[in-house]
Image (cartoon, rainbow, N blue to C red; front, top):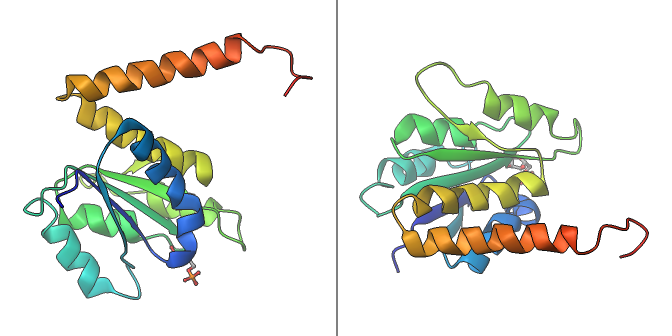
Length: 163
Ligand code: RP5
């Protein structure tokens, strides 16, 4: 099946973080393909995957990686599709290494960098949906409903002592 979003990551160990992107895409009904594609351990696969991403029908790529997190930047170097980078929280440096590796791209090759960890992964999925919603009114309405729901949930239970 053709998917709109490629959800790729450097290692299986990244899935615990990156599944948040899948969660919101499931909620909003956006199709995605999940695969481990490592910039360092499978560099030829990364180049092939990125170069064929347009012809394979992807519209947005989400890349998650930790530590020396070169995956999103190297994917962006090989495709014109928008790439959203998620810094996975590393053990040694708490994800600061991942964040800086992903954010500090050179002028001319863009990666949209999200927050470190699970919030970043969820928001990468949400942002991918928002990008797709530019040309998809039905998806746009689902995002409006999600936001309204979220706001109402906070407004209807403002006491921090209650669960
Ligand atoms: C990165 O190294 C991966 O994205 C992962 O966050 C980190 C550790 O990978 P594993 O050693 O757990 O496979 O390439």
